[in-house]
Image (cartoon, rainbow, N blue to C red; front, side, top):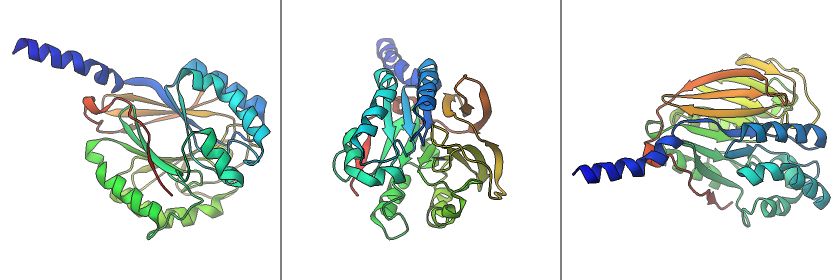
Length: 286
């Protein structure tokens, strides 16, 4: 009996370690044109050493330009050498979806997917394929949310077009909200990370944090549109770091000099320790 208990505890130790991690996941996006700024952000992230980095879209200016993908590959190589880089498709990748899919080895027509990392269920959506109710993507999302209820662990969504924004693309957010926000509220999604606007912004509505993190190297934007749910806005290059500890998740916006520009915590019920280990990306067809 004692031997069996000891064996069970030894097997559980790696999972328990995964349940608590410091800055183990990072999110950033909209790298596009300023390669020098992008390199600085990558250098900063390498120092933080996340195991998983999500890019929330617009990796390059012209997705059909192979030379730009080659440059992007060189810049992110240090991140990929230390961990994994997972994508969200942006509007600039729609110039050649084939190049995007090939670069990230997603396979043909794999434009949305889910991945469990650090005890969090991440869902990456494609805002440039149909996503409203009645579409294949909406049906897949609802089934995935049903299979990962809030009671079993936190769920974070990743999109390129934001739900709330004070930036230049604020006029595109209503369509996303109207189509998807009721579903996210129903199933207890904790946070949404998006890009498209080239800034950092934290909004909060109906129990969900909405984070715009588009300060990866595209021309920085300013606050131009009223957003009544905005809590913090910053026009600066940055990435977002996610840390996991018992009962809470810490979100930090970090500038290239490793200064924390904004931080907040989300109270969560973490998945059972045995489920906290990384799993393969679960991809779905378009």
